[in-house]
Length: 191
Picture 1 (cartoon, helix red, strand yellow):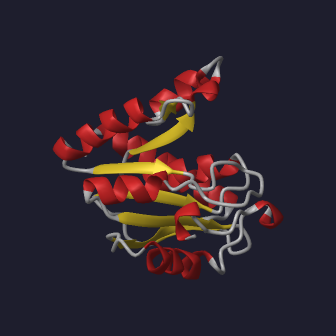
Picture 2 (tube, one colour):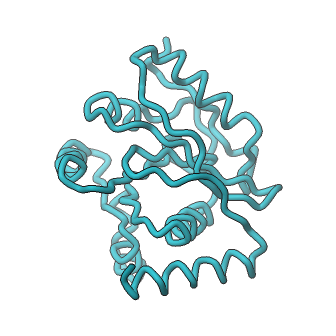
């Protein structure tokens, strides 16, 4: 393990301990990482601490507007990838090409698409999983229990409703910082 990862891991563990948060679960080596509930900017901080604690780098899709000003270098240093939501195809194609050759590859997506309550989740995570064969990993945070972690990893079956029933069951008892802002897991493709 490089010194860089050693320092990150120890810093993450210290910060998590000081904030009284704990990590759980087994980190996957490859996959499309769905993070929920996404109701606060603190979700990003906890996701980064989870990744550092687990000695992995997540390529986290972040809207390109956040890559301006003093936050940009921090985002790049933590593995964030700028996503132009008007034309996401180019970014996704480049990341999918990386997934084909990288030994470990985790693409993080906030499927809710916003920190405010919406009607539907964005289906990009599901389509990317189907098109690449990468499994889906359900990552989470639960503010009441102060837990952040890796949930189950599974391949998509092509039965969108059955796959999303699995997602709904997993997130049913997870609460974000602002539970009233959580968008329930449902895709337009479910009908």
